[in-house]
Image: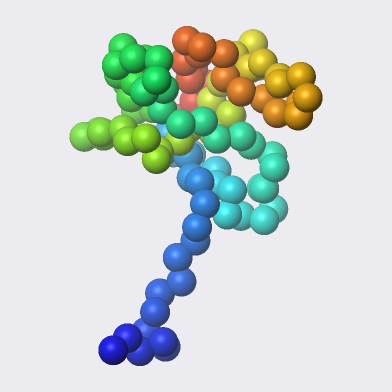
Length: 100
């Protein structure tokens, strides 16, 4: 049986996987400031490989659950949906902005 006092608290939510980036939507102070974008498996392996190289992580293997935050994309990489106003990445967009 599990002791409730021993259960670890785990933050749920999205966290950017780019090297040196700590942006996450679990932080209430940052919520809504960034959008998070899944690796582009639907665009093809070429784009997944390019994103993987750009995020500068050693021994990294992307999965469909991993995300890169909007801070790593140029404004020109986004388009906005007509009715919701939500932004999404344009097909073929590559993360290019990194501090590290």
